[in-house]
Amino acid sequence: MVVVVLTACPAGLRGFLTRWLLEIAPGVFCGRVSRRVRDEMWSGIVEMSKDGRALMVFSRPGDQGLDFRVHRHDWQPADFDGVTLIRRPQEGQPSQTMRTGWSRASRLRKAAK
Image (tube, rainbow, N blue to C red):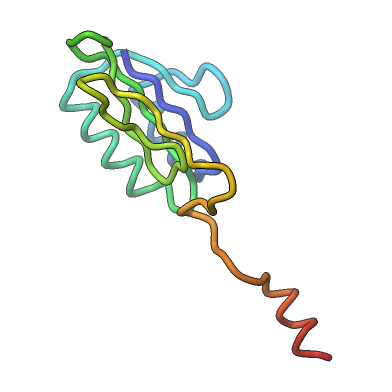
C-alpha cells in the first residue's frame, strides 16, 4: 500500500499520480503498486513538485511495517534503533525551507527613509 500527500504542488503532478493511484481527497493519493513503480513515481514527484512538498508512506517488511519518504518538509524521518520516527524542528529555530532576514517590502520601506 502506498499513500502520497502533496502540498502546494502543480496540477500536472496530481495528473501524473492518477495514472497509478486514486485521489481520495485533494492532494491525498493511495493505492497498491510494485516497488519499481513506487520508486519511479517518487522520482517523478521530486522532479515535478517544484516549490511544493511531498510525503510518501509505503508498506515495508519489518517491525513497523511501513517506511517514509519526504521532500521539502521540515519534519524529517530519523532512525532510532531500527524504528523510523518523524523528527520535527525545535521551537524557535527557523526551518530549513524558510528564508531568514527582512522581507522585500520591509527593505524597500527602510531604503525609502
